[in-house]
Image (cartoon, rainbow, N blue to C red; front, side, top):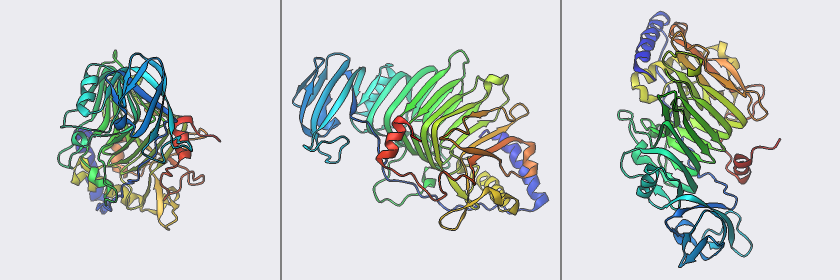
Length: 453
């Protein structure tokens, strides 16, 4: 959030405090991180590049590897691809519960050989992307150092491998982390079948979401040149454990398809209005869960010259948002904006939500607690920024969100022109307040193919 805007907002809110004498001590109960690994469904598909070899014992641990195809050779478990095209790989995986495993313990993969580089280390990934080459990840990757990866024009095929970027996005409340992947000013990037971790938690580790406050973004898309729209596709990925998972600003087209974003110390997915042509964001067949504030936010802190500068969010297929808040945990401001603002703004929000006139916003959870759903928020300041960002597809078969005015104090509305909350209708509860993501093959199938009704 822009500091100048915050300064005005603080003055306004302090004035409101003096008039109403409200208490602004925010409830700081920690939010437990959902740590269980989610399933990524590849459906017997796999990608390899035409540059570099693939050590199958590392990429696909197992034995008895055989290949069928004229464009590939195999020697001592090392795969060499001669040209782009299709071939078949059969092997016996070490994991006895591997996807598509047969009664004889084997798996048969339909492999796509693509023009690009096979990478098994972080350094190899950085070098390939820097050269604008496509990438096929063949091993777990862990970021090295704090430098962002500047994606020029690449498709990154993840093959469901983990990509851990904590050294880049990791930070503290006082020292904010960086962006793991930057895509800017007319460049194009496709992220497919990748399991991104901002921070990778050890099994059984007792952790809270606030440990990621101060973290940065996993994917950052921006364009400050209207003649060079940045294009980003995030397809069949999982992104978790950071501040924001994806942040978009300016002349950017972005599609999020069949993807899960969870465990954010801010909004999970954010698009910002600015002085350049605005973000055009499409979210399809995707799931958002467990954010300190809202699931998705469209924010506008500056004036724009024309209608093209505003954000548009298109919702398609199904979009599930698991993000209910109690009266004492509802937050609009992340801690990264400073402890004073965090307590002040969120204290006012919680005080306001505690009033009986907002009872209709809440529904009972199975634990007897009252909850309000924090799905999508449009937040804007400035005389030209009011009610300009828009959302399409709110009432589809797989998306049923209703608009509610966010309960800001009256005085704050002199600064905040738009603060709209789009949430699950209390009369049509599609996701229960205490419900979490059900990680099963049915959900994995829906992420890839859509939901059947």
